[in-house]
Image (cartoon, rainbow, N blue to C red; front, side, top):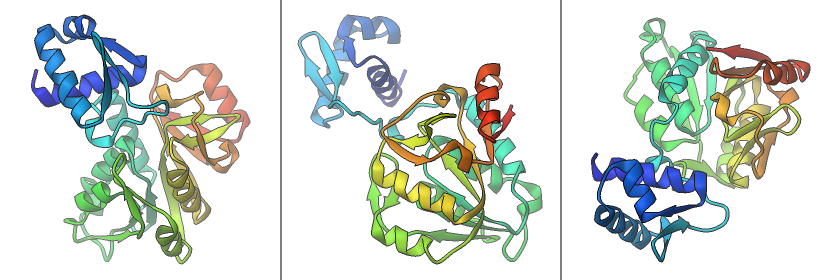
Length: 259
């Protein structure tokens, strides 16, 4: 396993558990304890974790794993979800994409759709995610609109009043939201309140709203609310979603597509 792969796995395990022991991590990653100690020391230097005697804990109480360190966990589910979301979008539409791993996969699925290979434009994509804009900018048939704002290093998303100004001047056919939590009672949510505010604006400017989220995000709550479940038209998730969860969202008026 490469160093980058180890670091990604270690950080995800820390987010899940809050604390990791050197010996425990060495066993799970099948490497030596000395290697894990070096990894912990180097990650601590980057302020990605806090070193403790015999292990490490997450850096701070409200910890959010930066996008660049997220592994492809639930990767196959996210790719299936992304393909299904992309199929909901018609040629020529104006699409808003928030940041996140799942919406990045949606952008990639749109980029390889044969019926979007030509057009003037084939699609208009509005995003506050720098990585998504970077990936799609090489597609001349796509019109890419990037909001202004200040970049969040955790998610590559632009936030703040400069982004508000752009979004206040446009209308969208569909907004595709990547979320960290989506619950029928509490709605869609993000870790960061500035990020949630931009996502909320995208929803308000759109004719329809699609949440793209694997089933691990469902039934969960997060700090910053984006919108109520009733504001979402369609949830695209994976086939592991429970029947009870589907029923709760249906009662809130959300169509659930499980792939």
